Amino acid sequence: MQFTLNDFPDTPFEPGRPVSPSNFKGRRNECIKIIRYIPGVIKNGTPEHFFITGKRGMGKTSFIQYVSRIAEDNFQMIPIHFNNNDGSSVEELI
Image (cartoon, rainbow, N blue to C red; front, top):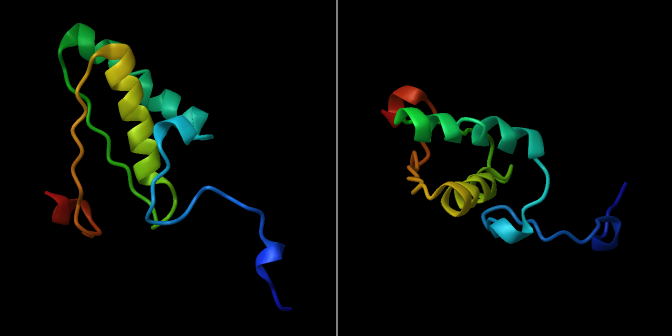
């Protein structure tokens, strides 16, 4: 079977180019899982850390940018991003 570009719908998503938080769609449940920790962090002063992993082009950076925007805009938090520079294990990250 042969495919042409017409066989694929237009999409704003392109691996290696994160979408802006204003264009981020989907992953509502995943966003809620992280955002629900924020009030407790503010109340208790105990930071939470999240390890986001996945294959290239899955939307990790777009997801983090979206959640970070919510933390900044709604909770006056300053998110810190750490790139593992292609490490593939927790040990390499540490």
